[in-house]
Image 1 (tube, rainbow, N blue to C red):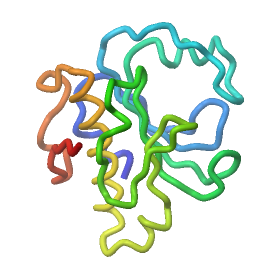
Image 2 (image 1 turned 90 degrees about the vertical axis):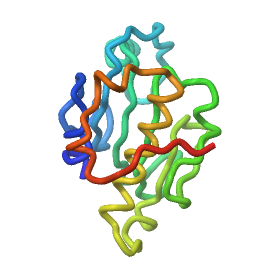
Image 3 (image 1 turned 135 degrees about the horizontal axis):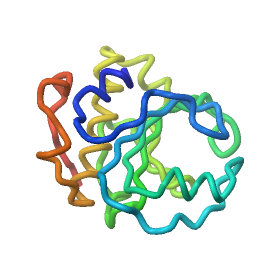
Image 4 (image 1 turned 120 degrees about the vertical axis):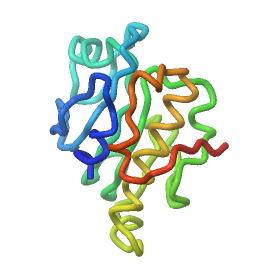
Length: 159
């Protein structure tokens, strides 16, 4: 699903990969604009690596099998820098919640696993969280996106 989600983006994007310092599977889209210097302090990630990883604006999504601050398997989404009002957005599907300590939206794996359409549920989460980040951060979406790769997930931002 992460590979399919990645196809609708023409700008720079990471491959689907295991993220540095953790066991999470992730894919990141980049706006192309420089970001403010990351403050560091990410658990299990050196400050130098964090500053390089977040040298440009990102919207990132992934899957974490659980542990530490979140004891259950979950998909997640975040933006750096986090746009104003991002955490107030109503990211779909309804099982999604914002985790203030992590500064991420979380969609529990059980909500995806038990959904009538698990693939569609996950794609909706990925697209909805990206739409919110890109819209609020005023990314140049016309230059960064194509419609054919969007897997039928409509662009919507719900506050």
